[in-house]
Every structure is written in C-alpha cells, then in structure tokens.
Image (cartoon, rainbow, N blue to C red):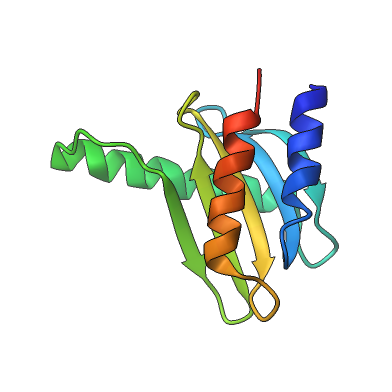
Length: 121
C-alpha cells in the first residue's frame, strides 16, 4: 500500500494536478486518492469515470478491437481529466484531474506513464 500512496503523491507533483485516484473499474472501488477538494470529490469522480472506462471497453469489444487503451482525455473548460489504464493490471486505472491553465498535458501524460510503471500491488 505504501507504494500506491507514494505513486499518488508523485502524481500530485505534476504541474496543475488537482487530484488523483487509483480505481478498480471492475468493482468501481477507489484504491487510493490524493488531493481533491470540495469542488473535486475524488470518490464521486472515480465512480463516474469507472462508467466511462466500462463504456469504452464495451464499445471496443463490440467493434472487435483487439487492442488496449493507454489513456483517455476529457477536456473541460478549465480542467483536463486524464484516465490511464495500468498495462500490468488492466482492471485498474489512474485518474488525474489537472488545472488546464497551469498544466502541461504532454508532460502530464509522460509523467503519469512513468508513475504507472512503478506501481506495485
């Protein structure tokens, strides 16, 4: 569990990070969070993004796509929401909310990928 906590703390060091969660999309359970505030309820966001991931997986299955999701981006007016599926454990994803004006999206994607590689269960 210590590795998960450290990984989430590392994600909060990404420029513009507002909050991060590690989520099991098969159960909808949040495995850990860091950051967030009254305007960003990470438990609620994690649950909602579980439905986004499930929907995308269902569409890929129906299309017969034999591929894996690396990440998904949801762009809001003032925020980026980045969902990164763990390649070692595809039922788990990292959800990172970023402040759009202060974030560097390209760098955030790279850093989240590096954090993903170091997560151990």
